[in-house]
Amino acid sequence: MITLNYYDHRRCHSPTVFFPPRLLMTAIEHAMLREIHEQPEAIRRTIEQYVRGGHLDPQFLQELGKWANPYGEVLIAASGSSRHAGLAAEILLEDLCGLAVDVEYASEYNCRGTAAARPGSILVLSQSGETSDTLAALRIAKERGQRTLAITNHEDSTMAREATLSMPLAAGPEKAIPATKSFTCQLTALFLLGLFEAARLGKMTENEIGNRLAALEALPGLIAGQLPTWEQQLCQLATIYRPAATFLYLGRGIHYAIAREGALKLKEASYVHAEGYPAGELKHGPNALVSERTPLVVIATCDPSHEASADHYEKTVQLLRDLQKQKANVLAIVNQGDRQIPALVSHCVEVPAAWEYLLPILEVVPLQLFSYFMALEHGVDVDRPRNLSKAVIETA
Image (cartoon, rainbow, N blue to C red; front, side, top):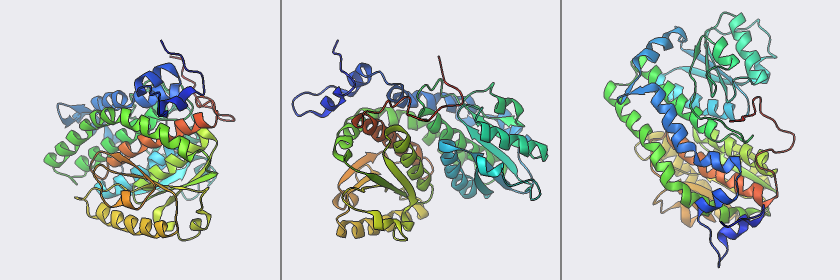
């Protein structure tokens, strides 16, 4: 048995000594890394709760009617990583279902008063189901007579009990304060919610829904197959990017939510400042920050079969050409086999091809690993960052 001390992770990319990623995970027993590796199985379990024989569970589809409203409006209230999952859901539910979706910080929603209550359904997202701001938002919605849906990792949580309808995750216990598997399971549940709503509203055919479910069910295997490569790459890249003072994370469309989540994960795990922006907003101020000590992390994936995704990709390629002229230091998340972007950036991490609305689940995993290894580079107790706490600390 090889024992590594807290800082020996640097040996994983030594030119003379290499410990395979699985050995690294065993030797450095951080809950965050372990939970990153548990994501394929957690996602698989979450899917199995709502899919029966390749079809959406008809019982849950019937139950969903208790939450749906005739106005086609949805308000999502959440905090932290859960709000970023909500931002992804906003794009998903609007594009697939034609719903009108707004996403609020739960803490801000609670301060707006009751005079201008909208008639829409309320969706609350919380890993623990006990987050105080989000729980308060749920209770305000109930007082207004609005229908509520809670997506949490605890089926017996306060939110799950008090909401009109509960859609529990199956992430399992999450001990590390930085959310990883609970976040990807939220994205999974929200994707399923989008399919349920599309079925209920007649926005997708049964065949289309079956194809999308098959693509979702393939994700755990894709992630499991990439994790060893991602872990080795991001361990190396964390050493390269360690001197950076701050990062700008960029994404377009649904990928902007993942840029926000990647930036938050870096801040809370490693204490390195980072901000997430829509890629098109870089030139409206943030570009002034770009320098040798302010690199960019750009989500530059593409689903060529999706018109908006292809358009976003071309715009991102042009942005990266401009950044290359500025001699910007860029780490890009790209599709496997991309030939354009590697020539324009400093470093690339590849993710498998997927449908536009499933790419976020793949993209966020290497960003989680980057945050983890950056935390180790800076000597941070990654499972218990300072000044942060979870509403529920897992003990199992």
